[in-house]
Length: 323
Image (cartoon, rainbow, N blue to C red; front, side, top):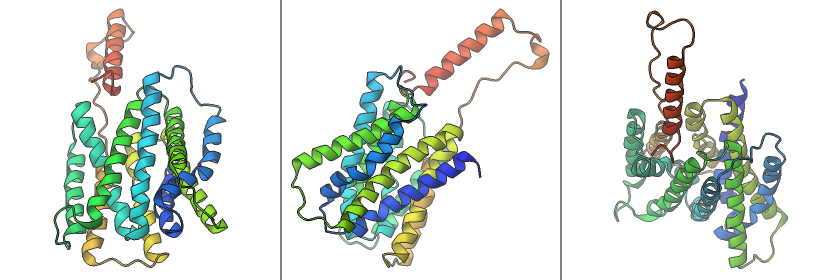
């Protein structure tokens, strides 16, 4: 198995386990307390990031740092309503539906970065709408009725956080951006601790679960960066987004949840939509001159032409400077 595939699989497992752990904690802690106390599990991952030898800190722009920290703060806030959903609704339905947050990211990128939706992503948007309909079709009080309407809160916040992280990576290395996102998580957790109230008696079992909650979330952010280091983002991103393939079986087997045919169809549509929405078409590079039409050795004109193409490619790949 290649290194990028190993780390991608580790990401899927890590996020898949994290996505259902809040259900195991139950009502022993409030949703804000779950997020705040998960700091215990995040600390080892932060230390691993900090001690990394190839952590590129030089040249880090203030704007990129701000984007990455905000991404962590917003994502941390999104976890609070998500934990409430998982604890009180069927995780087998909640996890794949909320995993559709790339819909929000794509919409923001189209609005502010002038990015176009490719054909595969368009299919993903259609599948996402189909999934939302299937999850909600049995309700009688409207499109955003019941838990489905509440699920759009973490979806919107996670989508915005992913957009902010996308902006951050235009100014920072992937590993530094991931570290700062986790630091943003910690800032959110400290704010929630300060807002209180502090829980009364916390059992060792609850401490272990809440520490695991923070660890698996942060570890998934670490392993996906390692996957990007040796794999193609266009492949790693959609595969890492398939963490519900771990969460759904856990919900069905461990928590004994049951789903009907309509919900099962919604889960399938949501998983397919996540895969399609994360697909990024490879950039089109200018065609090279044919061998018959250019001299065998480098020329000043040829070098200038290559420099010009490199500059244009750099502007296009930078979501800030290229907008």
